[in-house]
Image (cartoon, rainbow, N blue to C red; front, side, top):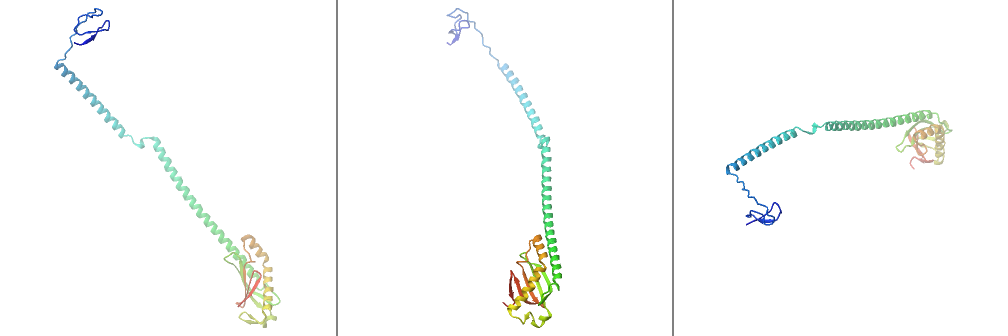
Amino acid sequence: MALITCPECRNEISDIANICVHCGFPISKVEPIILTPSINEEFEVQAEVKRGTTEQQCAEKDIEVNKDKSNISFWSFNAAKILLALIILALCLSVFSVYNSTKIAGMENRINDLEADINYADQRIRLTSLGVQMSEGVVTDKAVVQKAFFFISDIGTISAVVDLRPQPSYTTKFLGQGDFDLTDRELRSMIKEIVDEILDYGSFDFALLETEYNLSIDTGTIYITANNYNVAEYKDGEITLAGE
């Protein structure tokens, strides 16, 4: 025996009672519906067909979705195409900029080299002109500058080779091959006189070269020769005779 709930008073009563013992409400008996095997099979067939239809529809829908997805690529978006165009443009501009920078740097180097060559050529022209002017142009009582050649040393100073010719009164004093029949003191005095005349004669040109090209005659060396034989060197106010 099982207990059921009275529909009227909601109290529990026996499932075999005809009336509620609490309120007298008649309890009707409802015969349970029993599905025959044929009806059950029909329901199962219908459910199976419905389920198969649903699965087929879902499969077809998945195929369509996958097909649509397969047709979608990165290039299907306009933004991607614009981005690619911007990247290509940026690369082109970068290459062009690097090329121009390299080209400009190369041009600047060539211009600097050309300016340096022009400056050096201008210095050589001025120094050559000065040497020509001094040749036979610088004279003392004892010697004459027979020829003068000025050049720029590696340390940026103006050096010179000056070849002397004794004056007639000193011809007998010149023994040849750079030797003079003079004491060292007398020879130094003769060389000092000619060097002072050289520096005075070229003072304007030397000052101009010092200003424009940062050169200096003061720290250069003047090599004194006689008939192309070494006689002495003059540097920083000091005279060193050949052989010393």
